Length: 164
Image (cartoon, rainbow, N blue to C red):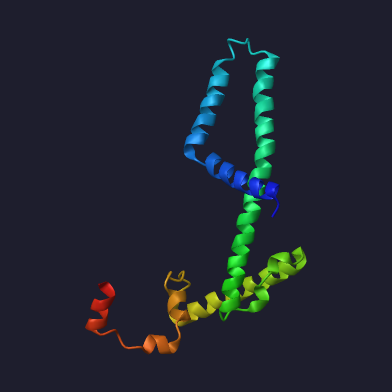
């Protein structure tokens, strides 16, 4: 990574974190209020209006690039993590890297996933769940291997060792 890229990455991350804080938002609102209150002092002149218009335009223009850079890195990191989880799990490895497909290919995959989700909800209804949303722990219990569910509970001695 070049020196400028490293600098820009650190800079954009810092600025994105800093500007996303409530205090910064409150300060910006305060500046706009101060600008509005200064209107009578400057006679609501064209220059007075130009100050806020130019300032907000420049800040917005620059922030778009900083935020986009941060979002791209976050998205790429998330994709890499999800791809690794898919790779090491029993999931369909064909999903790895689908973010690089064309829109048409991705829409076809999403349509198939939606169809599968509908079928799973219908099967769940037939099993008596009445279309209720699954609990947060349902997927964890389903993912456990049958042998793991059959394991005996730890003896009191082992439990005491773990808590020590």
